Image (cartoon, rainbow, N blue to C red; front, side, top):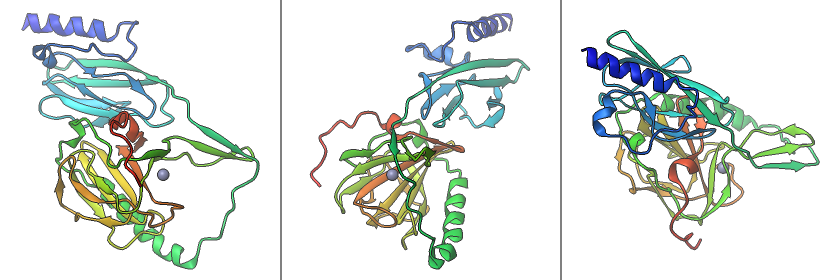
Length: 291
Ligand SMILES: [Zn+2]
C-alpha cells in the first residue's frame, strides 16, 4: 500500500513538472499503464489523441467536463480548430487522490483565402425551410447515439482515394468578413468510386432520400464520443444499426446535396468538437485513383 502511494506521488510530481509540454514517452511498459495519467501523443488544434488513466479511476474530467473511459483505462480526447493553448485532464481515483495533467495544445495555421467581395447570398427556398428542421433533428439524434464500437481505438484509414481538394479549418474571408471554416476534409474522386469505413463503427444515420445540403448523408459512430459523417454520396450500401468493419465498402462518392462536383466530404467530431480527419488518417499512402 505504501509502495503504491509512493509510486502515485512520483507520478504526480512528474505530471505537474514545469517541463511538461503535452508529449508522452513513446515506450512505456505495460505494467506502468495502471499507474499514470498520460497521452500517447502531442495535442494540437484539430487533433485527436488516445490516453491512459489508472485502472482505479473513478471519474475522468477534461477541462472540467466528465468524459468516458474504458475498463482498461483507455480513453480519447479531441481538440477543436480553435482550441485554446492550455487544456487539462483530471483523474479522480478510488483512493481519493486526483491526478492532474496539464496539456499544451499546439496551434496550427489554417489556410485562408481573401476575396474582395461578399458572397452571393440567395434566399433559402420555401422547400429548404420546410425540410431543413427535420434533417437537423435527424443529424442531432444520430450524434447522440453512444454505441459500444471500439473503432475510436484504431488507426484510421482514408475512406476514399483521390486528391485532397479541401482542407479542414480552411476559411474564406469575404471583403474582411470571415466565412465559416471548412469543417471536414474533401477528397475529389469520381462519382461511383467506393467509400470505405475508415474504422469500425455503427451506422447511426443513412439518408436514403438526400438531405438538402448533405445529400445522401452517412454517419458512423466509432464509440467514445467519436463519429464520422460522409456527405454527397451517390449511394449508401448500409443501414442504420449495421456494424461496419474498417475497410468495408459503405457507399460511393457522388455530388448529391449542395456540391459543385463529385467529391467526398468527410467530417469528424469528438464530443462537441469538430476535429480534422486528416490527422487521424495520416498521409494518403496509395496513389490517387483515376476519377
Ligand atoms: Zn467539404
